[in-house]
Length: 466
Ligand code: UDX
Ligand code: ADP
Image (cartoon, rainbow, N blue to C red; front, side):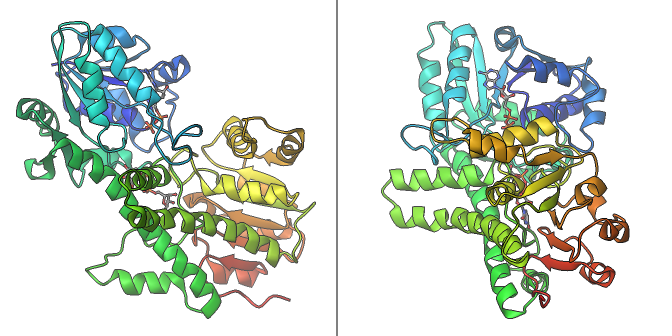
């Protein structure tokens, strides 16, 4: 048995590293078109930051884990091929802003069809709209070779930042398919380290839909608590107390009730929009509107955070400086896709603020690319005005540099290191009144208030201003 994975990203890389670690006798070949990314996988500086990943890669790389750009050769040799390429939301044409762009998946399927011989099992790992397997099957069926194929859906449930733990001890592994023999081959791989009762098998469509549904339910919890955070700020209730009170109800449970500046990441928004598109496609307009509201709520939360900052700082932030702590969409990852920080920064730049950004894992190149992408116009161009706004961003090497001379600091990502900064020192280097906007509710509000800061947090009643 030989495995190949097309796509060496946040999903393909860690997942294949774990399979290779657990199955020393199975050669696992991860391929990607992006040469720079592959070079990084083969170096000591992996392209993604994920706690524990280095050790797993070091153990298996060179033994049974290989990274290369030899896509055709890897497909030809493999018995089982995982498709783990990106499926971003379409930005153009029919379904723009909602449907998934399946260009990369389709290209993979065509490539597999072109170079395969014998029997292959093709596994969809990327998150896909329901019935994508149908399209993949049809492309494979039209292969001009005499190869035969089985298609499986095996959605990934790992969360970034905890990927290694999630892969090591998953709540469940989901495998959807039509051929029992093909399903069994993949069950046998996972069964090396996952208990049999945690490996669920379903039909293809249930598996595809379960992935979208899981993410929609998780995101819905965050949007629900965030909607309550707005009400807490207005009424004097405390959102963390409310979350604790409802989370101890075993029917509700404590997880994913952390109010925040808004959810980000490559999955939540994309998958909900996918679900919305799917509902619309089947004429289920009320179901579509129901799920759409989760995204609308999230957009509101991001906007609300930025506008609260402006309002609090005497209705003007132009020519002021703001220190942003964190850029990644959550802690322990260098991934910035859909991060709330990008949107909040955009809103502040439009108010003509100067922003000093610090994130422990995100590069300046990435931060600038994220802003340029968000601020471009419909044709994809970045106007000279928007470019001049981005020039007001400075990426700095630590939190102290971000705070120095800033009128406010804003916590965008819950990195642990932000909890224990020397806030007395920070305070003395800021103009007064010095504001703190905690978008993650990780700071000790009492301690900061005692130092002299005016602290604003999500879902907490506002200190009296003025
Ligand atoms: C998610 C799913 O959890 C995972 O199963 C799926 O495979 C991919 O999508 P991920 O995007 O890596 O994983 O991160 P997750 O931990 O789910 O967080 C998503 C966003 O929600 C982050 O921006 C996070 O900060 C935010 N969040 C999460 C909250 O604001 N509050 C919470 O209580 C939980
Ligand atoms: P995810 O978070 O889903 O893993 P990423 O964008 O991090 O998404 O990774 C997807 C990877 O798939 C990228 O590195 C991209 O270069 C790669 N990719 C996309 N299409 C192809 C293809 N046809 N052949 C090989 N690699 C591809």
